[in-house]
Amino acid sequence: MTATLEQLFVKVRAENRAALIAYIPAGFPTIEGCKKAIKALVDGGVDAIEIGFPYSDPVMDGPIIQAAAEQSLAQGTGAADVFSALKCATDAGVAAVVMTYWNPIERYGVDEFAQSIADNGGSGVITPDLTIEESERWIAATNRNGISPIYVVAPSTNDSRLGKVTSHCSGFIYAASLMGVTGTRTSISSGASDLVTRIRKVSELPIAVGLGVSNHVQAREVAGYADGVIVGSAFIKCLLEADTEEDGLRAITELAQDLAKGVREGR
Image (cartoon, rainbow, N blue to C red; front, side):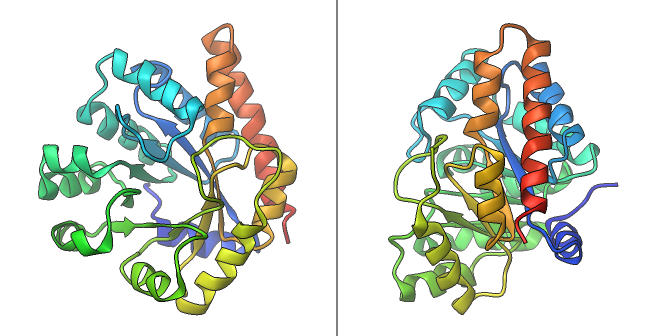
């Protein structure tokens, strides 16, 4: 049975912990390899999967995710593969969302994209480059199809805008831990905790923090104040650096297990 974001956050709150959310681009390391990776992540203890729609001009992605997206695009990954990966995740019993820039949604068809998310069991869509002012068609489409529009806020988002953006979110709010692009980092910016505190003043939605978490200690730290911990580059790095597909799958399963312990130790 497919889990929803709402069910996920009810469950983790009952367990007094944060959710572990893993990001992987569709079609990476291969179209079938992506599905194996999703299963390995779920087996390792990931609570939800974020499927990336690989894009040729990503504004938010660091070099690791860009390398994965380029590898995916070189194999011809398209919308059908994104929805197939999404279904693979939801069939595995975890909540799943798609992260995509606006251009692929518009090209596919706004209503059609939202409907395809719902048809494949998806809970929502993260749109990092879509502003609230340009969201009318998208919010109408997500409402019609019963999926969550998820927006990204950053430490630079001022208080009045924070209230405005979060009021249009559902499912969860994506809090970018720092200004800049995705990637593994040696430490998590203190701005992440401050941002979560500010969001809590204007919204009761769950807050998931992304950008920079790559190990047990960082996962535990972020889980101390956030409802979800999003990890992408660290998993992708394992797959990029592995000598064989099996080695890569083993590495991401072990990392997921380590991070899953971290989020359970945060409180």
